[in-house]
Image (cartoon, rainbow, N blue to C red; front, side, top):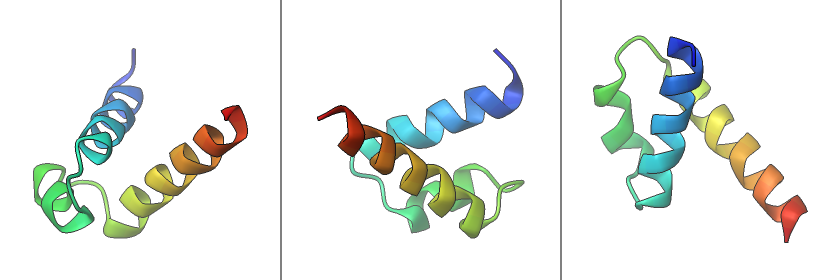
Length: 51
């Protein structure tokens, strides 16, 4: 697993545990808020497709 994939998985894990973007952003200073939002949006879109 690459660092990028690991970071994506951590963001998704925190999102599932109801962390807000404002809470996640300081934990990953090298990712922009827009990148975090995009990862969460992609995850939600994929999740909706599976239901």
